[in-house]
Amino acid sequence: MKNFKKSDIIASLIIAEADALLLLFILKTIEVELPSILDPFLRFLPLILPFLALVYIFVGSFFKQKLSAIFQLFKFTLTGSLNTFIDFAVLNFLMNAFLITSGWYFSFFKIISFSCAAVNSYFWNKFWTFKKKETKVGTKEFSQFYLITGISLLLNVGVASLVVNVIGTQFGVSETLWANIGAFIGVLCAFIWNFLGYKFIVFKK
Image (cartoon, rainbow, N blue to C red):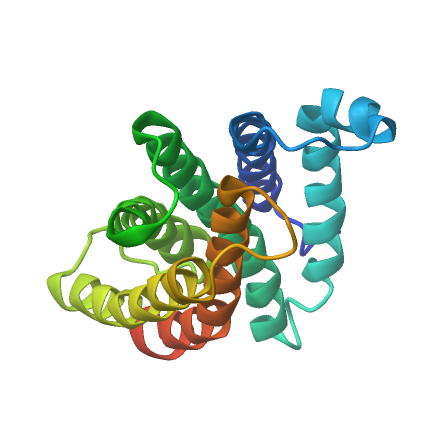
């Protein structure tokens, strides 16, 4: 239990609670029909996700002393979940507001949503995941962050745009759902790049 700090508990709870609220917003915006068996789970999502997050980060804390990179990966994944939900929430808000789910506007919306998630990512990863001691935001560090994030942006938006605009809607799903599938594939492609870049370049100790 000594490796399971109060700051980790608080951070996990904040992230998971935000995840739950954003996920409910995204599901409402997509208007996808989910099996009724999931209704109780969705109703108590703001309670369930924080509990699961605590269990998740508690398991990760066992690696803190001997394999700190593994513990950082646990925290990076949890932080990444919030980044992803911010990305998707902003993207769906824009698509719903302008009634556009493909084309160049989709790519533009994706850049905006990715940028919102990137700002969130910087502060959570700096002060929690990789725990840089200095509290100020250095010009060099911020530049490195946006270089890594810029490449991630190309991967994320590029792959999402490829899926949505080139491959196009498949399997009979709605255009809105397909846009979210494309966005999710883009997120996956950028995930490993982000972790390695942030750990060994941006927030290295």
